[in-house]
Amino acid sequence: MAEPTTPLGPQECWALLRAHEFGRLAFHLAEQVHITPINYAVDVADDRRTLLFRTAEGSKLLGVVMNDDVAFEIDAYDAEQAWSVIVRGRARKLDEDEEHRAENVPLRPWVGTDKYNVVEIAVTEISGRRFDLSRPWLHILPST
Image 1: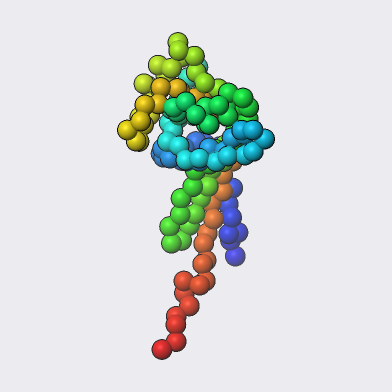
Image 2: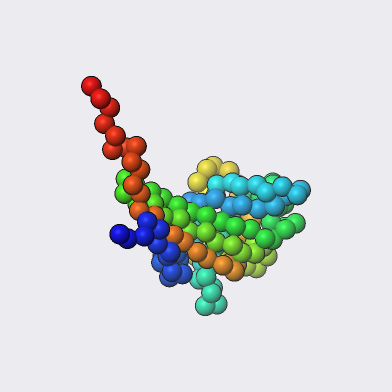
């Protein structure tokens, strides 16, 4: 019998990150952990891969400026499988002379708000898993 959980290698994790654009950012603010959805893009600069996202002034930006330790997660599932990729890293607001990097990737705000700040997540750890789902409750037929 095959294992129900399979680890994903770094290349497969990066391929999934490149193929998607929506995930969840976990960050610290005022001694609390916050999590928020963001849209993002993978950027390849100077032979290294990073994640970029845009944000307005507010708790996300304040959180990453005050504590750069973040985690980021994407996932998906269907009737038979699920997968998840988790990134840990260091976030920093890009300086004005670096913000142009966001123009070179498919990164645009999903909602009609101004998001002038570009944040980079430098990945220090990446991991992923694929899960075979049995979900037995879906196969139980009600008695008639």
